[in-house]
Length: 272
Image 1 (cartoon, rainbow, N blue to C red):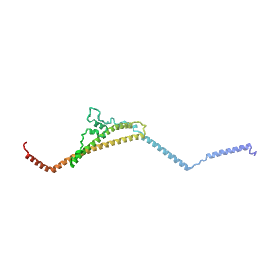
Image 2 (image 1 turned 60 degrees about the horizontal axis):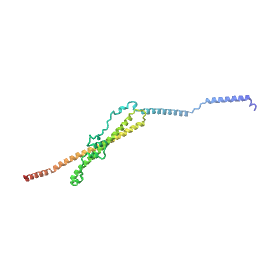
Image 3 (image 1 turned 45 degrees about the horizontal axis):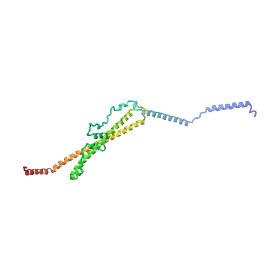
Image 4 (image 1 turned 90 degrees about the vertical axis):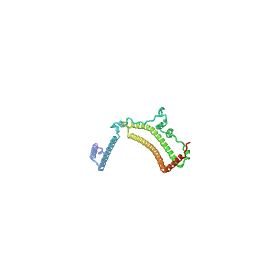
């Protein structure tokens, strides 16, 4: 026990332990442990991440190019009309102008669904129901056809006046909406997002839909007027044809009766 506690022995033991520790550290630092599978996996992961990063960067640059407005390359004001045509209104408030048809011109400005303005300046048709009962079936049918033509013409004209006035009124409002949309579209600001551009497209599509509807209504009114004119021309041709056929059928008898009546009148006539 005393030999172990000898200072010289303790010094030698300490030196030996220190040398063992130093050698062990140096030996561990020189040992390199590698795993080929892990190395390949890490390499592939790095390559995939690099490709994904470059793809995202390219997509970002492409989106930036797509988001650029046309105003970056040209002045958008050249696409606007310098003086678009305005909706004209009929001056019906002037007492010295159109005094006899003021209501009709007001209807052409704002519409008249009741047709009161049109009927006020149209020749009325007397009540024909009590008189039709006195006619023969053929005459009654002829009068009913003519009355139906008059009623159809009135209906088409009332609808045309009302639709013309409504379209004129809505046209003025539509023109204001188009001017606001035009100012927004021609705005050279670069801060507008894709959502703002899509909203402009939606607004333009809505206005275009309203304009197509207005054109369809105008075409329908024109078709109604053409139908009325066609019916009038057809009725006139039918009356003329009936008169010709009646002449061919009863002409000989009518001439004989006319001659006989004339001769009898001449024979029986005396100076008063």
